[in-house]
Image (cartoon, rainbow, N blue to C red; front, top):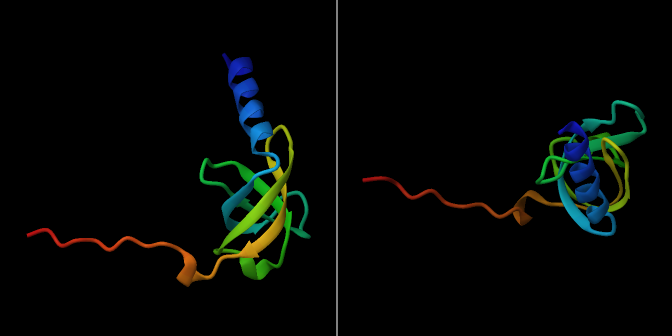
Length: 93
């Protein structure tokens, strides 16, 4: 079962190469302090070169490589908070 799960994870990651993903930057990469780390909407870890000020922000990253436990990417742009869609809550009566 573990082998099947690993293969499915690898297949999904490989399909992401060449796409642009919006990620939430969590902070510095654990393995390389010169890189930042964030997660995609489907919880894949992405490492990319960027400034520490990006932590806590959304960025668009081009995915360039799929590794066994993470993805590598290239920063395209930081997303301004005003560009992030929000949904107004309706009050319940």
